[in-house]
Image (tube, rainbow over all chains, first blue to last red; front, side):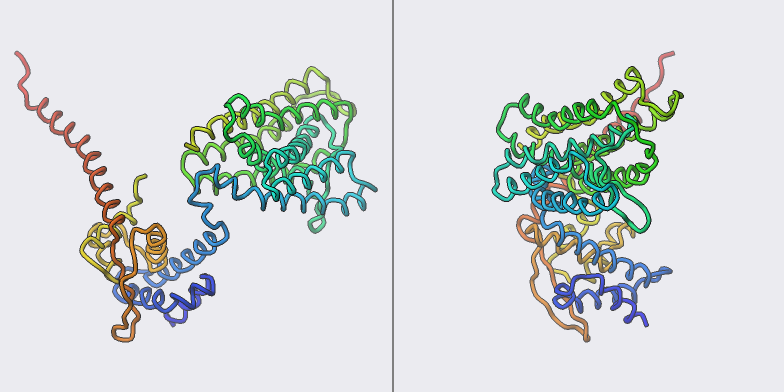
Length: 314
Length: 113
């Protein structure tokens, strides 16, 4: 019975590892169970095997990324991120056509940006990758900003079951990460001020986008609650993973991403709580400061990151 | 970078010479007064990681009473790392201990009348 349970838990390991070291692990676990006089000795070993297997899978998937400084890790992650980014945005065309009769006016720019980012990454030309990543990140963040202004005309709905998930909002943390990764790569060897400017560019684009979308109002702000939570969760998960990857540097990166994800959401909540007449656009004197604050926080976080990245990279 | 406690004890017990997994796990538990009791999964993961970092290496494998055992031994780098960590911990402990002695000395000193 005990051997059967342990053998079952051993299945958590990758096949190659099981074939190579399975018997050694199993015998070790059985010996430890046999000589452990505490309660739940068997359960401890079983859980230990499952945890070890999961950790093995994780390290195989991430490769050496977990042991790298965050900047190197971003360099490794930028290609899969760019590929996933291009796929996600291209996949939003179908739902956008069926739900809205056509994609938003920024769709073409975003898809082109994604493709350029992917091509730049594939070619190893990070400046080109950055040029592509910037509009993607800006558009993703702008959607959050535009909801703060009461309108979400750059939404890209993805249908999950019977629920519409806004692809652009849920994808925002990843899009930001992509832009930061490209900025870090493109900025290597440059002076800190230029690094800061590069990192600030997506946020400046956000400000322009938010300003452009100010004059319209949509009644579907509640649609954004699910993606908002999904986006925040994604940012937190990504942040925790990166912080675990490297204490210090990645913790700051995680904090910046979480901040970047949460600030527009908080701004959105704040602007909803302000009692004003419904049915029209938000007054400029209310929405503009909050929108700018939503821009400033992630922008500052990105700039700080990019500046500090030079020190961490030493 | 400071070693985590289980890693420190695994490297420390290997200073005695090559050991198999079961011996490592039991000695780690003894040395740490039962505070660190690695399971097979966590011990195996730690040894694999240390092996990839070049701190331990596999010496041999043998079958004893039908059980397959793999012996690990410390490399030169591994010994250097664990001794450096021990020195760091000793220095950190001294910071507190010296203050303890100074504080006791102050308490014993008679106060002026």
